[in-house]
Amino acid sequence: MDRIKTLCSYLDKCLTFADVACDHGYCARYMLENGMCENAVISDISDKCLAKAQNLLSDYVKRGKCRAVCCDGLERIDKDTEQILIAGIGGEEIVRILKNSFIPKSFVFQPMKNAEHLRGYLLRSGCEITADDLFTDGKNYYFVIKGKNCGGAQAYTKAQLLYGRDSLISPVFANYLKEEIEKKRGYLKRDMSAEHRERLEADVSFMQGVLNGEID
Image (tube, rainbow, N blue to C red):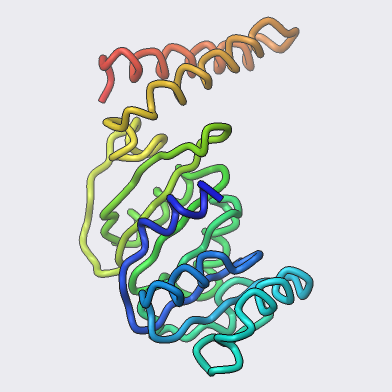
């Protein structure tokens, strides 16, 4: 539950909130229990997952404070929803969802992989990223991207695009990068094509430069 607790700390107080790909619905419960939103929507593409969330939030559903919808991504989510959370799925999948529907007014995204693809899409779409961080639950590392669809432009370096602007100054980041470097060095011990080896070695060199503060 540490992941959920930390993730919820990035959420703001709002009138309407949607927890997309909600799984068990813990984040929506946090928002409702703490008076962080007036009304919440929980959605998931899986009937089974949505049923678990509905059970957890049954009292709020009965009181009309929470509504459950089974849908793919944002298909049945109101565009005027003040804040939308999408967590626990891949960055490329979040990009697919946004392309097929809309970018929320205010969002918190927690991609499980390919966070750089999501950052790139948001920046190209003129979003303002207000927090771009990394945290750990002691076992795994998680990127979290918070922002607004308000127009404008932000310039990111290659390192910021790959790892997150705020992650680079996070005390958690050094441990994360050291572990990633060791993984890639482990891969380099395997048989592979010369092209693949050259690419991996370039990745390790870049990551080591970021870790040493030689690359911003």
